[in-house]
Image (cartoon, rainbow, N blue to C red):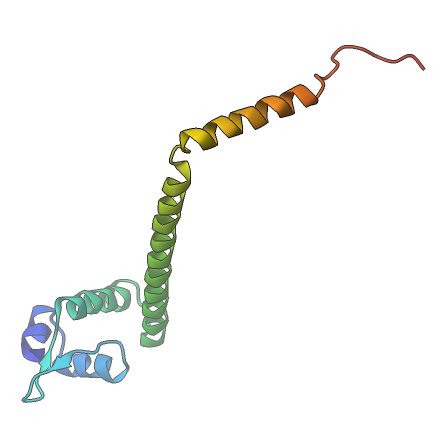
Length: 127
């Protein structure tokens, strides 16, 4: 509830209402329309208070920083998902080929090495 949060963080309840009006906090509501703060709301409030109290950031700056943090978290999640999918795909490709395929690849490699003459090393042509 707003009174408990205000007391815990030593801020006026009006400040919490202002953060909500500004869109910085979005507490849920009970059936009686009482604001209910989740752990995520409290973590976000702690970031807001650190930015304003410790770093002197104004509310417009706080909004920008919070939006950037959300975008960065979403990007991090996308990167982790991409890496996981890439690891799965690499795992599929790294499986040993069936014995028939393996022997066929070895034969192709031998034929190609026989067709390519070895490089000449150390000879110079006279002009």
